[in-house]
Amino acid sequence: RTNQSQSERGRGLQRDMYVRMQPSPAKSVGYILAGTFAAVLCLACAGGASLSRGFVTRSQGTAVGPRFSMAGARPSTRIKSEFGMGMRDESPLNPALIPADLPYNAKKEGFTTAIEHAIRNRDLAAVRKLEQARVEVIAKTENGGASKMLEQQRQAFALNRRKKLMDLSISRRQKEDALVEEMRRIGELSIDVRDQFGCTYDVYKVIDQMSDTFAKVLSEPTNTPRLITMKDDVDPMPWWDFPRWTINMRVAQMLREKMGLRKVVVLLEDPYTITTENYDGLVVGSLNQLSEQDLAGADLVVTFEPQADTLAGAERIIHASKVSNCDVLAIRGEWGFPSDFEAKKVRSLLKDVYGGGLTAISFVMPPVKLVPEVGGDPYPLPQWLVDAGYKATGNVAVTGNSGTGKSSLNNALRGLTPRDAEAAAVGVKETTLDPEGYEFSLAGPDMKLWDLPGAGTPRFPLQSYMRNMGIKYFDEVVIASASRFTETDLALMDELRQHGIPFIALRTKIDLELKNAAHDSGSSEAETLRKIREDIKMNSLLPDDRIYMVSVRKQDEYDFQRLREYIIRSLHRAKDVKLAKALHRKLEVQTIYNTVC
Image (cartoon, rainbow, N blue to C red; front, side, top):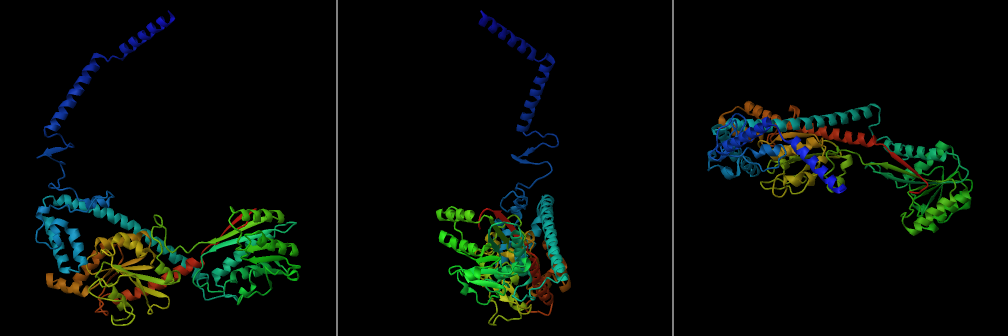
């Protein structure tokens, strides 16, 4: 009976809830009217009825907007790709208006692709014809206003992005110049001044900081000897041309001077490897033939690269410590991998013997950051740049589309003719197949002018060109073009802006361009030069002092001499920046206790 009564009460509650949830008659009528209106609306859209502003209308089965029409063609995917939509580049123009007799199959491929092919083939006449035809087709297109609007949007977006990158590049350049001026002001921008051991200023700073770190640890009171081990990862510079043990010896000598030690013993696996090092004030011996007379009364024992990955090797250091009853400093010792069974025994023995404790000190000085890390570091430094002494030389690259006269320009800047022995190869075909560095003696020693293969060819596609050529590692890049700058040139400029690499825009074969302009339109030389300069300035966003127009056949005219002077100044600036950054590096110190390194 209890279960039956509970069931009846449950059914009663359900009836009460249903009654309360029933809508009022007024609400029911409202729901019916709303549904009817929605059905009418759907039928009207399906039937092609013209609706109020803001809705889509239909005309001949093709949906178009009330204020925008592309005459049956899709909007420009160039604009879509500019905004990151990743679509193929197509023309927003009406294909029916493009003449069929245009070169390079422009009617099918589009003006952009056809012009790129013409530039690669050095067909300047075809380039001019295609550009003129594109202007005429835009003027004839019924939706020219819409095309212009889309083009303006694309240009505004690209311009804003390039301006931001250019401002960032200029800011980095100003900081580098400020560092150079500050180091020059305090007299530290030089590697010519060396101490009596042949060490430059940056090496002296490393030795001084190392000895200070050791002195601080050794000054801490202890009743029993201790073991201090040291590892270093210091990227050397090309001018560090001193003997092998120089830094280690100078650290031991400086420790002796700073702490006032009377006797410092230096032990090596083979003491005969010391040849020209200055070890004044130090007692040098062998780890394999320990002399108790040399060790007696020592205030500090220093070992260079001891092989202590076995118990026998470690016991030699322990014996030297017991005989001298002093602390031991082991520099770049080999202690075995911590997971090895023998290495574990070595570490356990050292902990038992050295009651004063174990201290492991690591010194790290990373390579000079000559290129800002923007969006990671996807492009490795090419080995051919490393072999050329990249870290201490000035390097300017000449690049651009194939056939722009880069090799001829390289020779002319260095005062050579194509027949000279040191000249870069020139010709009507793609002659530069590998990056080649040439000594630029007019700028001084350690200055190089690089001739790079042309970008945008089947052999050197743009997608891999920037990585394989190491573009971002050059101190200055000359982007050369024999006609209007193409999408390939602009992509190179954007990449250089992003990585903070200075570049200049160069128009080659300007004498031919002036001759063609005079023949085609009767333009004066001054007017043509002005128009070309304005076009370059608009596309590259460069100031006038980084825009050049030259002819290698007329080196006394146009901007050739000004270009050479600019490149020489740029090379000297690059060497100063590299030197300032190298001398300004900081030595990082890491200390770990109760272990060895």
